[in-house]
Image (tube, rainbow, N blue to C red; front, side, top):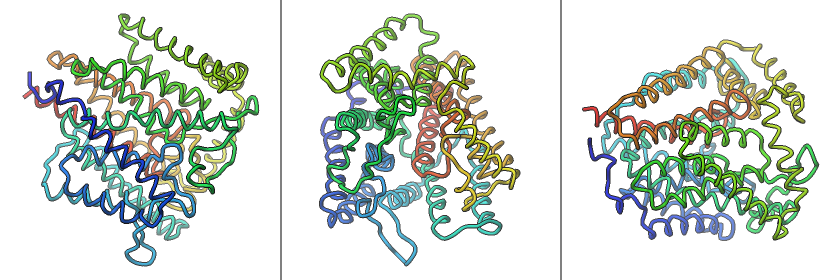
Length: 480
């Protein structure tokens, strides 16, 4: 048994100073972007300098990952209120997150980090094919500098896999990365409660009066819905809490991790988002499916959600009718889909119509797709997952994604079956496998977890696979 991840308990817990400084920077970023705009560029340049010289790479990966995910609409692009741009030449402007990507790649090269990927073959194939599609779209399809620039950013964020694997290279780094991210779940939930209790006014409107005030309406009841903005940050909190509680070193914080999972689930319920409810529930069931001893915990988990919901009603934040008819009335349709009654879902017909429109586009270039072009943007729809992949990369590229998915599942299941692997490590790998299964569920039914249309999704995928690669490497070291 090696000691790569059997660290002393005190070394695993993130220091309070680090956590306070992390969210001080987060609050300072909000201040300079939305209130003192003239300080935004100097602030981020100082942060980037700190990033370059710091050895706490997990800290800066977590910080810029969070900024990129735009929790509660903060740091999302709106005219006059957005991350500063640094313009080098006309037509070439970089955001702080772009510069962070370049800095981390530079650190990766300077440190000459030698890493071996278990998923090297599928990633290399996808990277080469992505570059091929990028060039193909510029030659054969409609495009522009703006469109090419947008997709070039997504391609650049594929590089997150390299420095994330290199610098989140110990279990301790993964623990601290998650510890930094977890509190954002409270912030996202608070923003949703604020939205509902104030009749559709977004929290960000306190800082950005020009923020879009368009109301999101429940298609069943016509009432308000509090959409999860920063969904992947919340998703990271959800599976991160499950991941951390698998290790004995973290047992003193299990109650905290359970609270995080409850907060995440409440956020999903308040959003009345069916795909998120289905994915979150599916992951929890997979994690606990073979743990009958954890049945009381599941009952307590459900009981806590019910109790908090009752308290929200009691304190007048929501009405009882709103909770029953608007929120639960929508998310409960997930069970209609599971029972083969998809036709009863209120948006089922519109989703099929969207799929038909995408199919028409796919027929125009079925083998290689439209690449990074205007046509790809025109026909894409994030209410569907895998059709977007076919739209961009064609069926040829889609099978490359299938190769990646199959390779990941094969690697992780083969490791779990090995008898000498530590039980805690097996449990952590099962959490990642359950999470990946949830991502595939969303991808093949509704939401695109593997989209190249949005840089924040690309960065999330790269961080997820990097965390997995670190665990694979720990098991390999144990084997040796």
